[in-house]
Image (cartoon, rainbow, N blue to C red; front, side, top):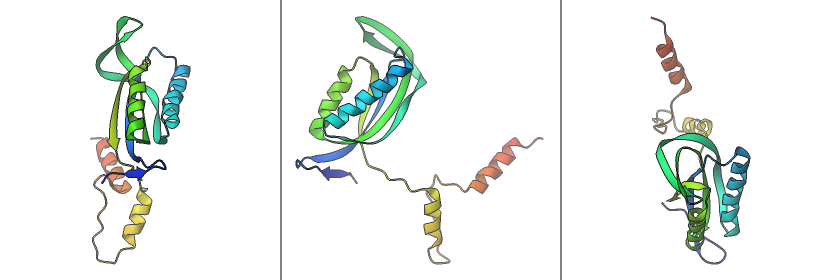
Length: 160
């Protein structure tokens, strides 16, 4: 299923996600300015930011290089962040070009995704309890009762 929305101009909008690495040489104060600039770029092109995560300094899985002010520099750390947004295909290409031209972005990954609305576990369990008695309740695979987690933790930390 693809989330496709028809905008007022008649162009179809889709949901995209960008994961990005900001150069570690940028000061922490400037990182928030960079994030604001990236998201404002989406909004100026008529897109809508749906979700995001503020970048945090992280160790990279491998060393990356980028030409900065005419010199190749190596990086082992970077600020990693992401955002999900809706945009038309035309505006997506413009945003991609701005990311490629941004001197403060070490690397980015742009993907088409789907708009996911998460349901809190409590609501999911309450709805399943409303089912007829005798019907088997099936929770998502990644849902585990807190009692089972507590029991597993207790078994792991038991003293011999």
